[in-house]
Image (tube, rainbow, N blue to C red; front, side):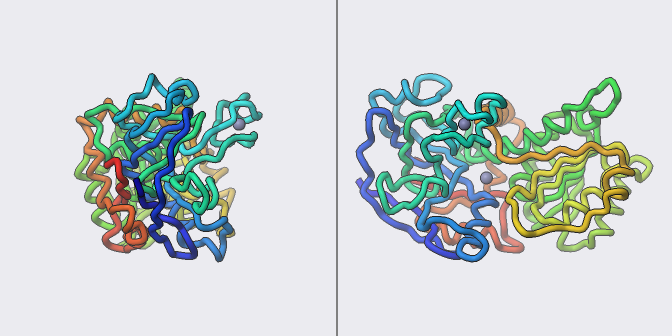
Length: 387
Ligand SMILES: [Zn+2]
Ligand SMILES: [Zn+2]
């Protein structure tokens, strides 16, 4: 049996490569990839590798992984971290890292994304060169070979592939909203739930899924700022954006005025989430926030050379604000996101956010679609042999 992976081979170049699917060991699983989402961070690697970014090429990216268990090693259920015994043909989502469980971050914080201990490679670009077995090392492939200590959750039958593939980015949105709602309610500092006004910058998957999480948490009015207009329209249609502002048709000061105009007394939003991933948006979001408000930064996740001028007195201190940040999530966040999708699948049309799915062989086109100024869907995903 042969299958294809999409290998990042150079700056802005992803190529299909065909390999023999390896025999799996006793402690391994052969997954047929269902859908793998193309993440903004994958796009950064696509755009910057060889110029601003060093990676041992060729690599297979893809960490927003869903798939079907095709072959289950004899001892796989003993060595995987699953939510119950797996069977062949089960549909699953997979955490892209295999944390050690023993380092400072794993042990003292349970924060597996910060793991710096000795451990097997995760799935996606971290795995290393695709030219050596097991070849199928990331989500952008027909198959993925899962080794011991993989974290795996079973996907309920009523959850579509499209919805399942959103689990990983949704876990970021949930963490962001959890942070914003973690403030002491007896001082009325928590103002998102029970009717708060929320502004979200960014209409990519992280922004729109943060809107879903905010709606589930009880936000009153959600203002979504971003582009293209099609992405804003989808967010409105599934009921997670009450007001939308197209950033391609407005200036930053117009947007700030509009957001303030939509809030009580023109004071600004109770809570602002920056999920655009553009340095200027960080300041723009602060301008929209009311005094004593809550700010969550989750767009600028990759440390780059890009900086932005911040007026600390004006933007931060005089507002007496609370600020949070969200970076990569611990494994447990994946299970929480999948359960949230499963219990709200009848209320929110998650699949509508996945505006395009392409076969593995067309992964290059999937990346180019992510860059398209007017046709970019909220999420682009790539289909594997398990779909
Ligand atoms: Zn991602
Ligand atoms: Zn660790």
